[in-house]
Length: 357
Image 1 (tube, one colour):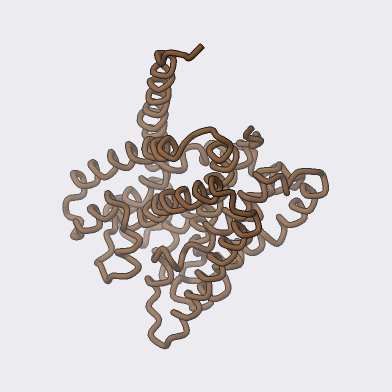
Image 2: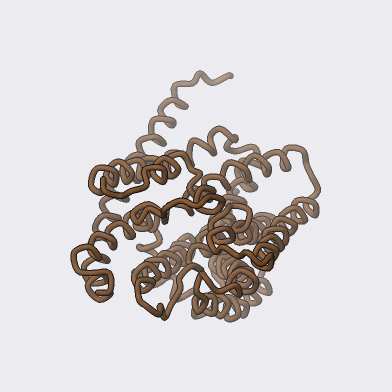
């Protein structure tokens, strides 16, 4: 049985993540940006690692959904809104000089292109690298975790695998930064150097599914832990992406902080942070966060073309309402209807399957 009931708090965490990213893509245009919201992506990654892991362990691992059904659900959750966005982007912004980015975004390897290659970053599509990272994670981790569960691998070994993935990703970042030829896009975008937050979220997912976070003591411990977790995330926003300390110190702390915040929200730990995450509009922003993430950056770019890249107030006051409107329309007219339609079709098909007496 899935014990995850406090979805509102997790939606609020997702809302915090998307707010950090949206603000980042406004203020990053300043000559001396006062804020760097990259930690919002790591918070998203930690949440994804948690949700996917505990979902597999509490449903698929217990004889519920199979691997094929898991992938079908992920496809219908992500693909329609992304396909619509890409189709509109190619038509509305044909002047974007990098069609290779559109192909990479559609085939889910944009993070590798931007991390390992030297592409001209597409101003309208560059943010889709994190979608590619998440899809790659769904494919690889679902295969691995389903296999580990079916083979009855001891829990300590499963946990050790994730701890090793976290440590390995961080060690690689440190090695790249310290080799004397540091290029920021390699540790920032590449899947091997940006997977620590996903691994941290997976560890929390294991702990939650295995019941290690049950009980009053765990809830109060996590409530206290929200203070250093939020501190680590906020401290990370003070580092620019060209600062080497971002990759050696800030990113691992933000990954751990994000995982701690997700754990506290999952068990509804009694803390002011949890109460804040449950207050509107954060849960609503969390619900539409996928579409908001898709649409906000190209719309900000459009407003910047109209008013000038240095008009941050204009980008915020015009671009944010435009992004919210596009995201709300995408969520309620594309994401939800298609998900409901697919689920209803499968339910009707299941009802027509002859039952064995």
